[in-house]
Length: 227
Length: 299
Image (cartoon, rainbow over all chains, first blue to last red; front, side):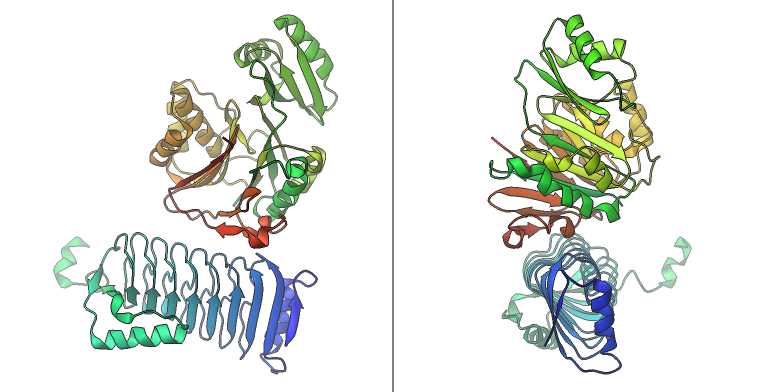
């Protein structure tokens, strides 16, 4: 295991060292210490790495992640795992706004709460939040899944495309074109798989499913006069 | 952008080190606001029949002693004063209104940055570290302090346009964000008798709170009204005589993070600014919710 101390080295040096593993993988396990809310930690990784960040992370931690597994042993700031492609990003504490924004694949696990706009414009990532999510979560979400074991804030799933949303607790309000849907066997199966993958012990039967009413994003010829 | 930082002590453990703990917090927010910086520090209270003012004159060699003597003679009262760079803190055994009236008549080139029993506001154009050094922030003592680093978006980079803005006796405001209805609101507040020094949008928010508080609103009610009447993006931190308050708009796109231990409550735009505080690694750290205000005050 290689230890990288951010008290004595810069974020740029860390990220360059991690990126170097992309061409020749010599060190799989990395331990990052003394992160004190620094931005852009472990951004743009593209190798089979396990990175453990000890301390809180600032903005855009593990952004654009591909293949790697990144764990933050603390809280994470805005834009966590933004545009992640694959791999796993896990936060032991809370995540700020726009976690998993535009992410296209992989698994994002937030063990605490997530702030506003969690999964905004997500495009294929699976997000599992053990706590609650803030307002406008999954706004314009296109594909993938969002699992919330706590509550969801206002306007959940506003202008939603095809993300599958599962919420165990209360939903403060649903956004435009987002509705509660029937939980069929295939959805219970999908949710069980997501909870198992995230290592979260919850009963899938206690969740409700939400999705797009599909009234907003497909053009209807009957509405032509409105344009 | 802009950065906000605040540190409120729950007991007297760190009172002697308030400035030393706060300086790295302010400097950590330089990336968010390199144009100007300022802070409002509370402590060294005067008795209830005294008033404390922070005054600024453009010249470093202004004759503060002469000004204090004139004031003491004119109002026939005790005056105590100390100079800090081109700013002076004046303690006067008189009412705030009588002192303000005297300055309006006799010292038009002296700007009153703050007035109250406890507050001192210091602010300037330039890098936060230079401003902290200029006023010897590191050596300051007190019970709580809020500060701001500015990256101007809505109006010019001037000392007058920098934060904190005084919003009444012992009250001040710092703002991260931008208001979209400030021009119309400024006109309305002018008709209500509120005066403005700049075209700055944050000064309108400060003027709005001054107006509501003058109308008899409690701070809580004034903030509730602000949520209805201010349009735009904001994270506000408001300094009061006994503590501070934090509020974000309902959209909450401007960041804020709070940390609390048994000794203090700290607020910052980004966690980085809190990282130097003692015991912060074991603090409760969370993000304030939108459209909800948080108030800490010593009882």
